[in-house]
Length: 458
Image 1: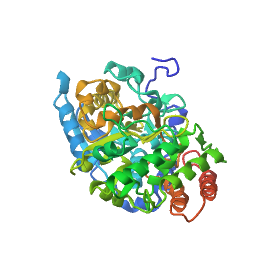
Image 2: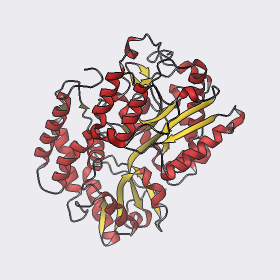
Image 3: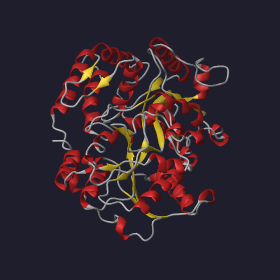
Image 4: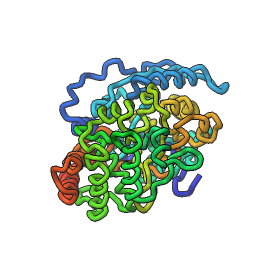
């Protein structure tokens, strides 16, 4: 274990970081989602005290649809004692994805009804760990079950901590990537000798690729749906901005530390790429998916989570990490992670079993990979079964250059921050403002958020 991350125990109740009153926790929850508190009480949530036996654990997550089915399979496997280990009795509660999920997660910690384990986007950790809404992992205990820092890429592991203490264990990395029609890409001369998408290396190369794909399909080249979407423009901008080598930092109290020239460079390229001619600039998210699956474009910039849906169509489907066009490789990502929601007096035996459960689920993440997600647990990536997954294995390297939202209490998946960043970017793509004005508006929006008091520490 690296000396940078010393061995950790679960903090005692007397730990000052943990001594946070219920009112403050509730105020944090209310600030996090506002009117969404009306989404309903925490009905159907198992109280840890009600479960029988240390290996009877309550688990919260937000996985529905295909992801929900895969999580069912993974839970069933560990419950039956996969690999000869002792099984579990799991009481799983599935809640709706979005701000309401995070509100309920915070309120459960405040109200004494926290689950033993819960799912959390890693990008949201900065809003939860500082205020004691989640408890720390004991890395020595995890190591007993075969999970340690060495099993994760540094880019992802670095975001699991607050003040050097680990509060989240990544299950996956789910990046913003490119899908492409192999036949169109081959016709456009974009494949290398192995049949994979060749590196771009410059903005000009990606612009030319769009033109070549448009010629190959007879319609559009590269598809990107962003209109009225609260996150898409941010994903594209964040990847390109990170590739310039610039930092996007949001220090508490402000002002935002943003390289204006680098940001303008990224937004200018976005407007050049989606010019409304070679590549449409006015699609919404579902419109871009529909255009790609119907052959009206040769490439689509989407989240890897669209893979199961795309496979339903008659496309010779390829995928690749988001192309490097500026100075360094970077791919915008997030990560579904597992956390220990705060409990005032956790039972040591149950807490040990929670660590064992987290390790067991990670070791089942080859199942999770079938949905397109990149397993964060690197030993799974080393298996020949993962290498055989097509096209999943072709973009696995995205985890090595993962870029998440800046760590701040108001950022992350489903946040108002992403929405406020997207609005000026959308205006620039639609031709309603210049890249320079869009970036200035983004800075103003970030500064406005930074002036708001952090409900956890205020």
